[in-house]
Length: 461
Image (cartoon, rainbow, N blue to C red; front, side, top):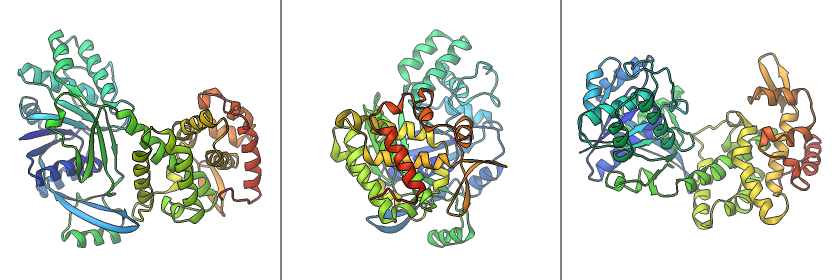
């Protein structure tokens, strides 16, 4: 039996990692998951539900495949036990001494992987996840056991590397034995990961809830809804292939020496396309990603931008990236997600810098001219921000007869609300990491495009 320790009981892990291990069991595997409540915050109702339902629940996948909507479900039963270590600490410590624990998964939010020098080795309730993990691993070391594979899914760069750094800092801070430090380096495998599945969780409205209960044939307070697409890219280290099986097992799992490719592909193709859609979509009166992708002009804009200005600059394997891009189009056509543009618009400036600017830069380097569609996208973004006004409860823009709240760094919102010059903003290295006006024709084209947008001209051909 392969046992997994899982820090986190939330919707994402249950509709992603746990359904994967459940599927492996259905295919003849022998996996069981021990879920650890990661914080002492009150989630008593959820823990009661786990107990009431004997740790079983349904995952419902709803989406679009080949242009048609689909709904499937499965009953997940791979969770052996849900432990509240703040109330039953001994049960938690016993797992550290269990030789069958081979994998540790965590999803403690992006802020969860951090080092706090004030954490004490004799603490627990009020210390960080990496501090708890260090204590867990030390207990395992003292029991004379082998190491484990650590697969954090927190959405930060090099998540496993960052987790290991934190553990090493606690080893030094707490003056733990050098033999433990050596054991941690040699016996534990910290594998960077990238995860990709949109999970909306428990249905929010009664109509959807009733429909899904009818679909699965029962009430389920733990049911979790996600999209059909799922990808788990995991850095290949040690003998991880003995425990993590590649291929499609509800989600697609890839063991790779090049995790950077999968991150780059996701950021530029999926996230970049989201970012490209938002400003134009909002200014054309759309509310969701689905609204945009079912609009002829916006849909064509996304497809052309992907084909000509994004895909060629992800990797040399154009075919593989194109296949992923095609799956993205299907995901955008998912009518069940209700992915609000205004939600995606959060921190649009930093998102454009991280998700779109690299493709823009690569296109310019190859062709010696600005990317036409990415320039249009940026023009809509600047047109949107140039209309920002300060309101009672923050900042917003008036679009199509409605006031939409815009959330970004306060300095950016204040800058545009004060109607300060665009050239200074585009040339600000502290904002973009470089001077955007150095790209020949970029600033002048953006200014011209903004004027057209303000005059009601649609720039999408």
